[in-house]
Amino acid sequence: MAKDAGAVTDLLAREAFSSAYAALPASYAGNQGVRLKVHLAATMAGMAFTQAGLGLCHAMAHSLGGMFHVSHGRLNAILIPSVVSCNAHGAGKKYAELARAAGMGGSADTIAVRNLKNGLIRLRRELNLPETLAQAGVDPRAVWRNVNQIVEAALADPCAKSNPLPAEDFLIRRILEEVTGRV
Image 1: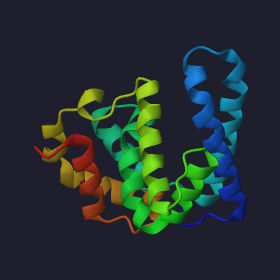
Image 2 (image 1 turned 60 degrees about the horizontal axis):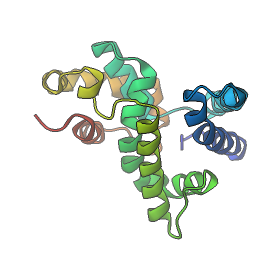
Image 3 (image 1 turned 120 degrees about the vertical axis):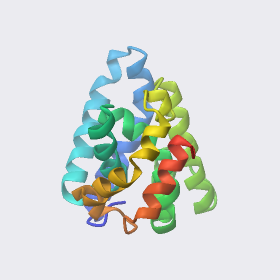
Image 4 (image 1 turned 180 degrees about the vertical axis):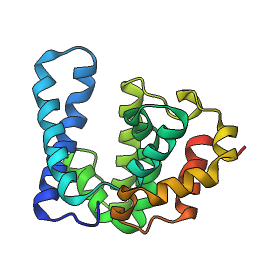
């Protein structure tokens, strides 16, 4: 979805996502036979984002992780469904293609995007990852006490520049509301 994405990075990213989405539950369950698929997916994803960039999910994970000492992977898992919803206004077609490539498609792009978000939520649950910042040990009141600093750090992060929509204050606050609730 990143601004510098192209045909090759899109191909790598779609294959990486589809492979990881299919293999992660089995890998998490201890099936070592799928580990190579997970490693290959991670390598393809790295090749894609090295060229295309990342986006707001990673920028926010950097900001929140630095402040609250939660691992980057956990934060990405918490943030990604909300980021997909927000970015769908500018990258809905690509999200729909991603959903279809991973077997979660729908007849209309909006349905495919909804299925992608729901699929990510299901995967997060299967992997026993937290759904909210509170479940990751972050007091929602602390988020809102520090919201200006969080937003400022996320906007200054280089990853924010490659988000498919302009990374703006209101967008970050909207995502934070979804992952913390308004206190």
